Image (tube, rainbow, N blue to C red; front, side, top):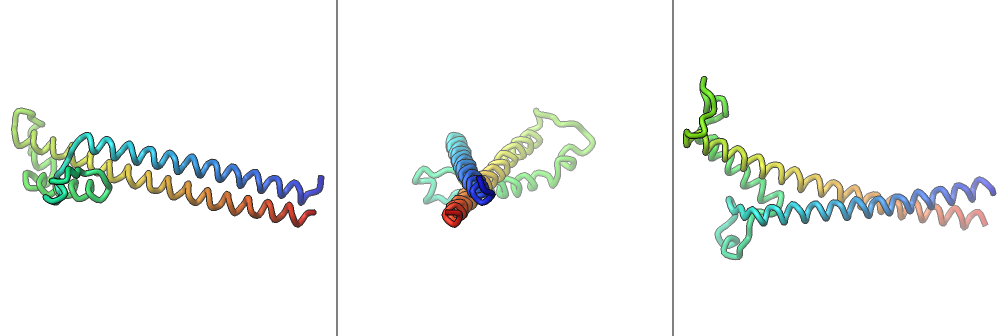
Length: 152
């Protein structure tokens, strides 16, 4: 078996592996994106969505909408106190204090929304990486076929 034939087989193998892995990345990215959308739709958060969209039953279910809502909650939370330390002063958290409770709930929802923004971003990166792997794999398969034909 000559070196060129071995090289052609190796490049073809690597190309097929890259295409398969790329497909897995794309499938996982899409699945996780759908999971995020479904989870957010179940929560039915509507803060920051325009009135005409609300009448259609739209809820926050994208990175852009989640970021807008998170920013809105942050503004409202800062209206209560600029920081958590400022809210507490020298004391401890008191869940019976409505102001502190509201602040804590706002902080929790804000974090939820920003985690959704991060999650959507990660799924987009995974899908993009998978697409790049597929394109690279196809190029490697093409190169392997070309090397094999030149070897004849």
